[in-house]
Image (cartoon, rainbow, N blue to C red; front, side, top):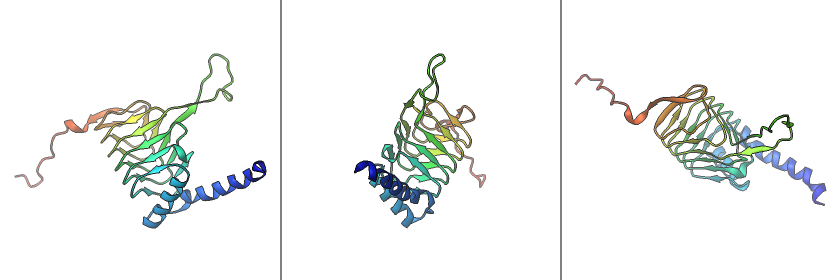
Length: 185
């Protein structure tokens, strides 16, 4: 009986999960998306903002903090788990990847080598700009900024700004001098 019902369950799951991808952002749609994510095993904090086109699979490996904003057309693969802290902003078109294909030694076949799952953690108050790629096993520290188009292959220290391919440190937010007074006083 389970084998007969399995295709119907997959279709129902696809139908329900597609609402996350097609609904616009806003208070009511975001509440509905939060409910769907929770029903499928994600941990979701208060007040998420999830734009249309966001693709998350499998959902059970996702943990979102409070006040998280996920921009349009973001892809999040959570086989290795993805944890996103409070007040994090994720820009449009970003890819957060927590699993990758294993590379077999020698002449082993790539297609059947399996996968390597590694957790991705984005700590509180981080800003991930548009079109960023974050690879498996990366931790983005508290208050860090990842510039648009960066490919993050290593951990990002707290309060640093990184950019480039591969991402490298551009500067530290804690070492910045105060802005001059615009009034000239």
